[in-house]
Length: 382
Image 1 (cartoon, rainbow, N blue to C red):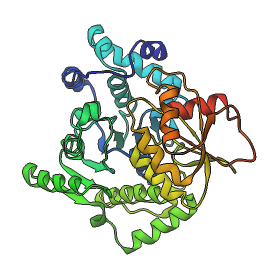
Image 2 (image 1 turned 30 degrees about the vertical axis):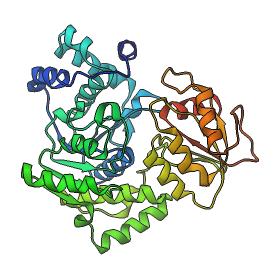
Image 3 (image 1 turned 180 degrees about the horizontal axis):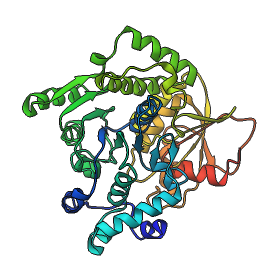
């Protein structure tokens, strides 16, 4: 069974063998059909941009896949096919097909994400389009081995520095090196990203353009209508614009109804009248959330991985926080409670341990997918 097979693979590595995925894929690629792939790279907004685009493509009549990660509650969330998460039956079927293509040595060697990426490609064999979201990387990401027709670049910021580089320039270069034939750049916080993209366009001889080049006045009217219907926060509207720019690049006409079922759970999702949940876990996400919730105050249900810049995240969220309730997450990557509490105190924020929900408070559940999973499984029963 797939679940037991993946349980034997570590989710995280201190070092990554970047030669493994290309090497193993080269051995089996002749047995696989690669649909038209739109590759998504960036730091924030890949999931929502991908779901906006994939939902529209499916609504327009195309067999469409959307590969995203990580998942919140169920592994199936990673592999979306024609408006639904893939079934357990289909997953186990393609798992057996993939094992038949791979040697035992290669199947065991592939990382969790690498194996899952190949698994998704098998699920998507009959698709017209696949929106393929990179993991943490760019040029060396497992998703970058497949030939694609377009790369979409969401906002790039500091994150995963241990693997991608310690400066915006290094991270942007690593991510943008994944561009193959053409790219559309979404709104960027750092001008260095645009500078590197412009230089790369010349050096590689590829078309790299801003999303604004593919939007017109009619698009902006439709974007306003869709945003109102879906109650999209400003940062989600930016992701919608990038998705629509991609449709226009592909020469596909659309109407607002194509996005009626396009929201991705966990992105400023309202669970109830007094609970918002967002799986943002870096500074760019925190800044976007703070702008979206400006003028309101929330009890922040929070925890963080050790490698995240949680001090800056909390500083950015502070204007919309009344107090912090630290949720206990059972995972080795989570920061020690005493260290996290010290960061909260340094910002003059009141804190306590999260124990239960109150109808008298407005909550923002914010943090990694592990925080969201812990909260939804153990505390929220709506």
